[in-house]
Length: 395
Image (cartoon, rainbow, N blue to C red; front, side):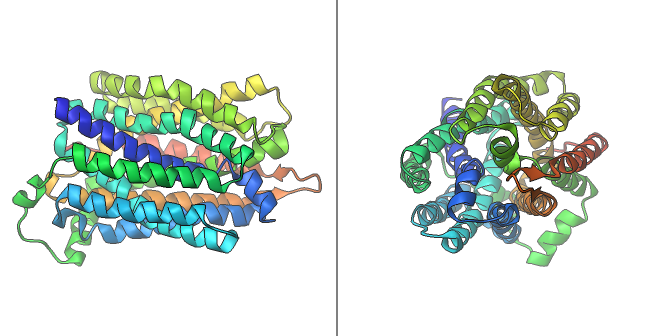
């Protein structure tokens, strides 16, 4: 049990760095749009470049992840992620940053799939909700500590500094992987004969239960990533926040989800993952509707709404991740979760691109049409509920 805790904390640390690396670009949006003189659609492309490359790498990773010891493949993948993050820190302009984000995304997508696969292999289903809650709390900690600190450092120095610090933390986390994650080869003993890549695709696509889980992942990402990348630019351009005040959004939202994420995981284990998912999905619609219609608003009221958005978004994802992971048997869990990670990332990229094309700027520099983006996000979110009801946990 002690070894399992050390493993989960290591995965949470890796997840923290990976999430901050992905998230930090979005609140830096107002600064990057100003410094690089880019439009909302160009910024949306910068965000989606990471998710598209992560989606493609996860797709091809599905052919190989189940062929190796989980620890060894995680080490190699994380070295690549570290180099990509360092490339972001060294980027002198928009084009180079775009390329560095692609490299980070290639390895970041594989990292996400491997984290879920390791949890699925090591933690039994009856404790998997709590394990997911612990590891996913990295999102909360990234929000309350990583992103605000990164924004603060960027405001003191420049936008490069957060990426330098993430590069150093990535190197340190490699040591944690070596020390705390054991060799994980159980999936290799279950399936000695490795099928052709097309057989891997067929195994997932011919499984109706797994395809429902993948479709749920797509709808969840479409419902969220039409909103998240433009939350910071909208708050600065339309609601009246300064770039420094954006840190309050992530501090308050992240601080609350640090406590609610493990609680939701335990609640999902006790009350049922589908029930808790449905409740939080419905609650999530409220802040989406409000956020996308705000004008100049007092900071306190905005923070109340954005915090509700963070808490309910995280609250729906914890039980959903446990359900989706449970649709695969150990021998093809890595392949399935890599496919799932792939479609999640691709859907996130598509959502960012769609929102970037829908959102415009008026003569005052304010963003327009964010309300229509909100309507579309709500529609995608509502589709998730009947989809989740048809998913069956098999392992």
